[in-house]
Image (tube, rainbow, N blue to C red; front, side, top):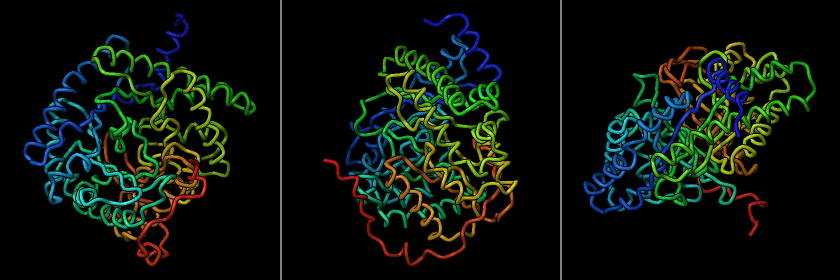
Amino acid sequence: MINMREVVETNKMIEEENLDVRTITLGISLMDCIDSDLEKLKSNIYNKITLTAKNLVSTGKEIESEFGIPIVNKRISITPIALIGGAACKSSQDFASIAKVLDDAAKEVGVNFIGGYSALVSKGMTKADELLIRSIPLALSTTDRVCSSINLGSTKTGINMDAVKLLGEIILETAEYTKEFDSLGCAKLVVFCNAPDDNPFMAGAFHGVTEADAVINVGVSGPGVVKTALEKVRGENFEILCETIKKTAFKVTRVGQLVAQEASKRMGIPFGIVDLSLAPTPAIGDSVADILCEMGLEYAGAPGTTAALALLNDQVKKGGVMASSYVGGLSGAFIPVSEDQGMINAVTAGAITIEKLEAMTCVCSVGLDMIAIPGNTKATTISGIIADEMAIGMINQKTTAVRLIPVIGKDVGEIVEFGGLLGYAPVMPVNQFSCDAFIQRGGRIPAPIHSFKN
């Protein structure tokens, strides 16, 4: 039972501490849409999405109104399109035409983003996978709401270095295609190791092949709530610090559980998971970096940052799993640069570098996220950064990801404005030493020995 004190406490979190449900994401399987005729396939996809998601936005607004809980985004994730389009698509242009259909469907039902323009290539690429990957620059430059993700590696299969090399080139090409908008297309493209099937957050959301025909996943976020709670235990020992984070995460997750169950009941679609990820926004007081500072760091990036982030991530997960039987997705702490004012301040002050961010990804939820780099960065350098991050995920049996934005025409120190939840970012320097010969080897980095657990 929820008592009046808890109601008042939750209202305060919403009104003063930026607590929100970041997204209701409706996962939709498109497996029954497959057809060898491209036009028939596109018609099937459009009809399936618009029919299944027709009440998603209105249901979200009803729940917002009745419970007073802000639901920032309503989104859709779909089965990876490389799987769905393989029989019909003979060229990259064919795949890009499916992206246009996805964009039209997303606009028709009123969602913010649709994720799943994706391929899963951790061990090898089919012809369809490669065609989809090569279509990404065109697809993302001619659509508004489509997000793309590629899984390049896993603990079980190793890292597909051919795909890593190709994605370095594709990211640069996407940047070039969208250079008039500060290479914004790259903000809608993320590469993964160990990508989860049920992630509700963009740009990495897709509907896994093990999922039901349709499912409701909810992502909750409350960095401001955690920071406010920690202000009350300033100077206390680590035991009290950990308990405070854990209890706060429990309360935040309960809000997500409520919204997920209500959306599931009203839409007649099964509830999947709650993803409790401390996902920041550019708003003041909604920053993961500020939580780290509240723990006692001058800036994110100071000595002790990785330890502080590890503590935060672990306690968030411990609190979340007590609040819901179905916690999934990424669940932990995100450290995007452009979307977190505290991170932006740390970069501007010189407290944090890409190398330090990489170290932090060993213990955070996801990886190198929303980082603007110079537009003249070589494709092999981007591939090298991706390979490093994939290796961290593979060895540590965790999800890692890279969302780099090489901003064409911009150099180190210049500011790039993305707008909305994507925020703004200073362009960060990258290591200038070459990894060309390493990336050009091709093939696959084998899975680590601890992957063999059968």
